[in-house]
Image (tube, rainbow, N blue to C red):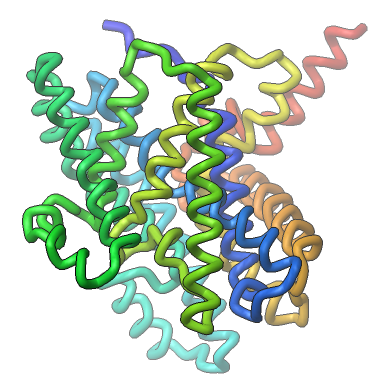
Length: 379
């Protein structure tokens, strides 16, 4: 039986989400430095950028829940989990070595202690996403089996549960303490599995499978309103508390996913599904294809590279410098991961792709073959 076709609009979403993740980590410093004119612009862009991780979870949820291979445990154990675990382990070693070097504690004992620590939790903040994704992958055959037996009413019920997780978090964020106690029900805390990210994972499948179209103007209006609410809420609470407050934005590991960001990500997801779900032109695919294929490796590397930049004196104070460093980090991570993917022994360790796959999709061998083929076609 044939698998579902390639999801074209996911390519753009992956690039967008990868850029957003790098931007929000780059902007963290200036946002904590105090409110000024640039702060407001950074705040709005960061409020948008925080949709990145929900979008990643949504895309993974849709892809896994619509693939017949998800029911095959051997595919999970032999292919899917190693493609996550091995790159995470590889970049964890790089991160540990860099942190030990920076702290002048680069000794075998210190390195080993940090690697043992990595078994219990991420050694760099952004690695949490892979830890959570690996757990969701491990549960995916069970989730897939359950979803496949649901009828229309069952899927509506599943959507209501997923929506309730975000709605409850929104209420807990905006209600004063006196009122919040009446909606702080234990059942919602129990439903927020993996900090609510499982609901986002399942929501991606439901949104991607939804056949009716929502008017694009309504989705765009909803996205603008949500972005305004998140940005203004972040500003008001930052001024009120005297320090950068991300309760309207936060979706990091160990915290409940911010409901506003999930709804905003849903609007973006559906907008892309309804407007960008067509095969790109050949030259666009040639340019963006390798970036999409290396998006996970770029994600895993970017914070390490940012740490290296900051350690040599690169500073970020304004919106312009934040954008500049974001683009620099994105380009540098792409070039490095593309190069590492060209080195056979390191390819799988860094990208989760076999060398043969990388030669067909993203490394320098792939690029040179395409250029050679293009030159031959012109002759």
